Amino acid sequence: MLLGPVWAANRREIVMELLARTCKAERMNLERLFARAFVAFGGTLWIAGVLGANLSYQDKALSDSAMSALVPFAIAVAALIIGWFYETLAAYLLFGGSIAAVVWGITSGWETGVWLTMGAVLIAPMAIAGLLFLLASRMQRICTLEET
Image (tube, rainbow, N blue to C red; front, side, top):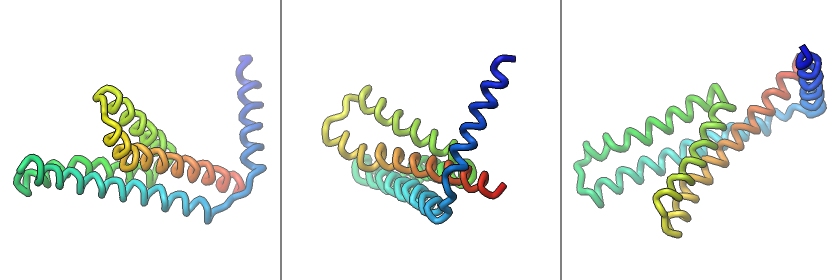
């Protein structure tokens, strides 16, 4: 019973804060565009990386390498689909992926060069895409509240 009025007051404060902001649809669309571009570019890098590593270092056939490359392809497509419809969920999944990559690096004992490479092609792009999805989601809420 006591939480009802407190929750309602907090909700009103959140709504008032969002209403104090203005809808910037162009910025929101750019955030979405760049977030999706980060996800697509990162997925392309990982597909190329898996194909190249399998073909050059493991001497796998092209068909076997292509089968291995389906995993990063499926992850990238899933991230794009989730990000298209559920931006906040995609943001949290991308942040979780960044944290998981850092934990992976710590547990595997990556060298400095591996840290720099993974930071540049995996950790930072996922974190940036997550941030852009989160900002676009927030702006969408502002624009939705402004319309009502």
